[in-house]
Length: 154
Image (cartoon, helix red, strand yellow):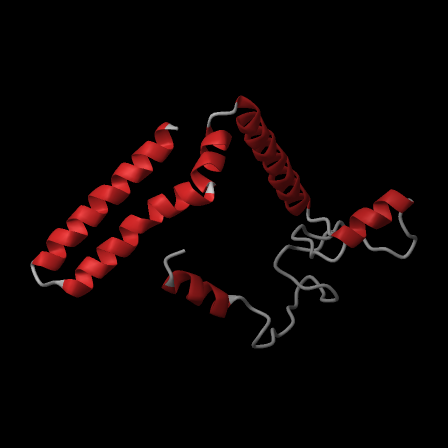
């Protein structure tokens, strides 16, 4: 009831301001103000204000909003954990089915940065003798990446 009264008063005040604006020969601005001032009374007459007031003052509605927020938070958290693990939906489905024999582990294709256990030095490439080094191809070294990172200050 109070919301309807406030909306009606706001509409009356807006129409008064529109009348004063029209008296000052600013008809375009007066028409715009009148349009804005008719919105609150239109909302009252259509029942929107009563519906919003009913939602705003019911504790069960607020409990529903809290539950929706909790559900959203759980969804976002579980998605973040999945992404952090690096699992795709297909990988999760395969894991639920018991896995497949030909599936490769996610980290299996990542290169190892540790030296080989055969005594090979960290700076040499596989297949070279300890005294010799292979020529590196132009795209093999990371000098271009380092230059980009230095350019951006990283």
